Image (cartoon, rainbow, N blue to C red; front, side, top):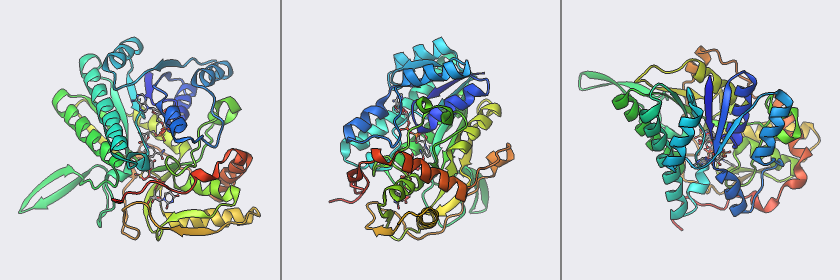
Length: 384
Ligand code: NAD
Ligand code: USQ
């Protein structure tokens, strides 16, 4: 099967492209490399020394004997996107190619606009290009658990059945996202749902939780295939950041009380979930939603797990409760369903001591590359 991985130079996309390639899929990567540019603009680098895209693809080709096509360009450029699809002729499109940081989207007006234009226009272009030339192609789109926010009732997978004034209907689950980035995902979901309804396209929206870890079977086999691992206050995410902070002896940065609870998953499960979605495509006209996470943790619980694992390795670690730069509930009910991918055969890698040890050791190996001034959060959600 021919699969185009949009955003294939990024954290989830690179791991997924190699996983699919090793499993025999005919993979193309489309990426405009803007993420490397944003890192440069912010003056940050991933913990890991990632090699240039041409070099990492060539290395994969040499080691695995498998070719991966590369298309460097921007999906907000419709002519480029449409030409690429006609050339590659995908049967499935996996769409990771968005601005994915909540803090980045909250820097100022310019970053909010840029995030929403990049994400919403990019996805809308994909929908039009599919409608024009590839109406049978299956779109596997990365959404986020943060589309739902933190409602005081159980979170279903995409839809909820409601009885109101004696009548009953199954409707899209209410959305209460917590940043202009998370809002862009809600806008995408609405656009995709509508396109499935009016044009009969088939799509799966994967509402993914926070991803952690760095090694997958494929990215771990050679240093030139190494994946990015962000630790900075803009692109770094909770568990990955805590492990890197522990490795350099920086107090773990829990925002506020730390009762914020989210869905989490190992990057080895991300790549598997994508494969499961591709091999079990949505029907024509169907807009399918899966919640893609394996476990729920509060931020404080994660910090405690990292602290304990680090102490057992002889590291000296403290937990700091920083003033929360975000506007979010710090103690709340959170119970989200996640059975659809399990039903398709996902066998989760649950967070274990051995994974924490391996991530901590990985962070120690590259700790010389950490620039401490980028650890504390600098972007505030508030007015002043
Ligand atoms: P990333 O920033 O590492 O990768 C995104 C890639 O998309 C980058 O290589 C970037 O250059 C590319 N890109 C962005 N805009 C583009 C455009 N207009 N045209 C072409 N390429 C473009 O992000 P990631 O962590 O790999 O996340 C991938 C997707 O998964 C995102 O949509 C994100 O919202 C979603 N997601 C990520 C996480 C996580 O914890 N990392 C969790 C849930 C959902
Ligand atoms: N947090 C801390 N300390 C930190 C970093 C984060 O307490 O050092 C807290 C945040 O306040 C928040 C929670 O941890 O309550 C998660 O924050 P995060 O930065 O780990 O993740 P988030 O901003 O939600 O975004 C990440 C990805 C995004 C994806 C999302 C999935 O960057 O692309 O969509 O996770 S989810 O959170 O389920 O929406």
